[in-house]
Length: 135
Image (cartoon, rainbow, N blue to C red; front, side, top):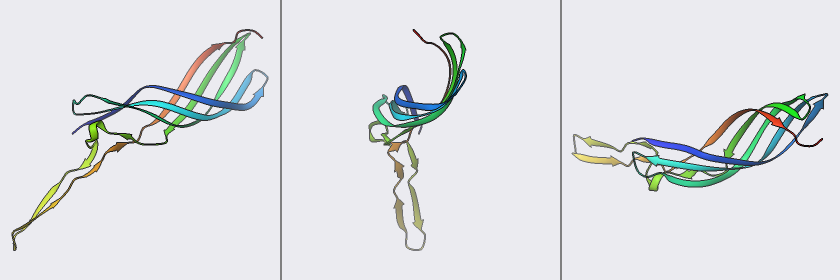
């Protein structure tokens, strides 16, 4: 049994604050995040669930020329809830077992312990160049 978890988009709404030294800004950032979680199981059609949570991170931005900056940023995104697995089937499971007592010939079944939800966290590193319009 194989379960695939992916996200094809995510977005954040964040505040950013930090310290500036000449042309360098060192900052922290935090806010809300939204992610489109897709789960699928063994060839079944993918199930899509928009999920919302929080994000936190930090970065460094350097103004290397007039109106131009270079930045590197790290973000951790944590969803507030688990996304349901595909169509209610288990994405992670411990298989069912059967035992037979040879003395009394009694069969004991232990049901599968299943995980019907998946947790998706994102670790994102971004590198970019920005152009700032105006002054």
